[in-house]
Image (cartoon, rainbow, N blue to C red; front, side):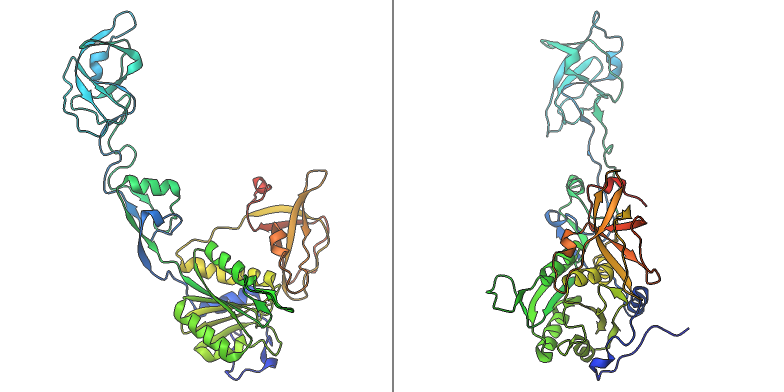
Length: 436
């Protein structure tokens, strides 16, 4: 069987582009053969910075929590057998021997026939094995009248009953939430080992784009891709490095990419990968280092011009300038790599069953992704209505969509009324209908 991997000459001509489009699966296989994503490192961070970081090792409790037997109510520390037989008509009478406060070691020992007043959370004094609630007792001078018996261990939290020493409380690869950060603090930890966030350099190309915040000259547009891709990198657990906009000029682009290779573990570019005279990224990438360009064109819609390279051991994802195409291809190719290099496990996508609200046609011979909105018809059925991709440069397609439908290359169309699977971009009001 002939390999899907094909070699590009460093002498790059426009007519060499997109001679062979790879399927999405073929493109992923080519990438996997040349690059195996792994966590980029481990760092020691303070507990205040541990939220949603990926743990690089198991966390094992070095102590019991709580570290001592403690009272769970305000009342009296007693020996349980001393209270047996107590009732409302014939109270048991015990002698008070002292008081135990929160945050101090008990200075008293409870002996048979005695009781010590104790506050919620205070350590249980020696000799005691239960706590009588204050509501079932009456103090008269040095005497304590008990009107209800307690059993051994009642109203007492035993040492290690929450977390016991040697217990694995969090596993490598977990991302502590606010609750788990509190648990780590309960163990007395101040720092934990987490995977280093992979640095992802983002370069936008094109003579027509201007960084937001600057004056917008006639004929120019603001750079949306840099910021949408930067947010996408953060969602994957990466650390974006915005390197600004670069014109479609080989020397400047080469300098920007060399800088990106020094600063980052992964490079993502947008624009400059189609077949126009200014689309020079594939040629420049091939000049920067080996093995160079691996994929130049994918049989998908959107995203056909997507180019993938490995330069000196670092992956470069050169995405189309069209905002929808750029994010789609990021989602399919860059996202899994960033997840792996961040030490994260990619979650299964949220999927819903729906009914196509209109007929949908794929691009001939290409995997087609149709963005959709979800609504309900009068009978309560969930409808998936296509959101038009719009012309090149449309920026609202993904923002307005709930998810997308994937149409295989071999399928000719989807009829209105056909059942479809919708992959959600994020949870929606319909997520209660989540299906496998």
